[in-house]
Image 1: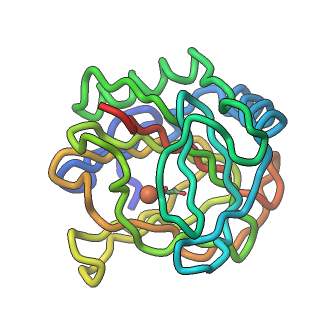
Image 2 (image 1 turned 180 degrees about the vertical axis):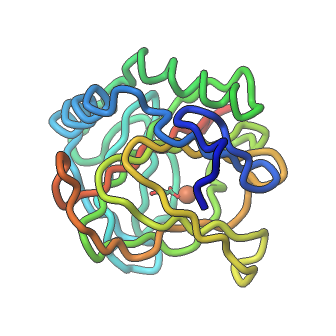
Length: 212
Ligand code: SIN
Ligand code: FE2
């Protein structure tokens, strides 16, 4: 519930290790232009889970490595399997905002080496999962949301633990780490309405450190 102190840009501690910075992205258009540039170089694609299901979220990556899923499993790779080329680079202004956000949330010194970019259309979702393909769980995850609103589900260490249901809107930043770094999380099926500027899309960028 919105309160007197939920000022844009003020870090709000939600639970142990999890912080939301409402409207922390002060220039959403610049981030969207970057997403457009990334997707021109490494196009949106749907990935297959190791179990053979097609994910409803379209993905691409920027950074030294990128997260991929296929029949062989989940992993980070330095070459985009679609283009056969390295992934696009991460823009330094955005990495600076990631560093600032991590520090404000209590995780100074975070240096991401990958940005996984997710694109949700109406009806797309991300089932509860742990982010555990990274080498060192002392590094947090920093997440940017743009476009349509969605409900972020944030649970515990077991898939069956109860989940917080946190609305995320255009411009919001979420940071989680520490004792909540391996907590199950996901995105409930996106309902719309379309965003006034971004249209019928939710764009999410998660900045991670894959290699220690
Ligand atoms: C993720 O868990 O990797 C994505 C979360 C989101 O789309 O907000
Ligand atoms: Fe995740």
